[in-house]
Image (cartoon, rainbow, N blue to C red; front, side):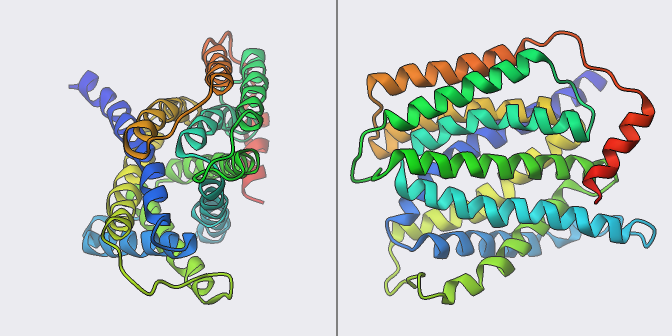
Length: 316
């Protein structure tokens, strides 16, 4: 039974990866009928409604007076990183580049998490991880600047840069999530909190002059928003948060490496996207950096005093 239970977090992370890969395609389809900020707010609102239906799952969430104020700061950092800033940059990225290229940039995220996790959570970090990150970033730059301008990708370099910034936000989110789950917070509660925080954050943006409100409701874009809110926001984040709460953050984030593969396949099949030969080579460079980072040698060890000092960084 113990062996079976140890597999569950990995299955959860794999399922989250598949669902997340489909989210890039769903966002592209939703953007065909609605302004990006309308799509993101709709996604958060649908997710919030779904969590309200399942509110009974969050009755045992620990919020004690003893650690309330320190936890509030950590929670704020988490929701600011994602969904607030993350989706702003990712929405802009998907306006400027293809879903396939966005998925490829996601491969860098585990390496960013590993670097941050070393300083904050004292998880494993080796020279190979740093070398892998350097190689992957080089491959991402090559992927971006070799991209061809198209109707669905008017500015690939800028779009991929926005996605890279989104990955930095995602790395910060993952570290905060790991800290909060270590303190006893339910992964499902933290996922619901993201949805509600996102709804509150994006609601005023709907009334900005730069946001175009919909005048007609199109079937495919509308279904895409519902899918993003109910399946991706509820399902993928809950599965990922559960996985992160059970295994090391760097190890859990390594599952993000599968997103480029699924995104590329879905982008080609559903959206008829293509990559040129240089971009395929650039993708291989990115994967080689990720592959190198996964062949880790001995851990960089620290003493307990250093660990306590590092934990205090994230709380300030």
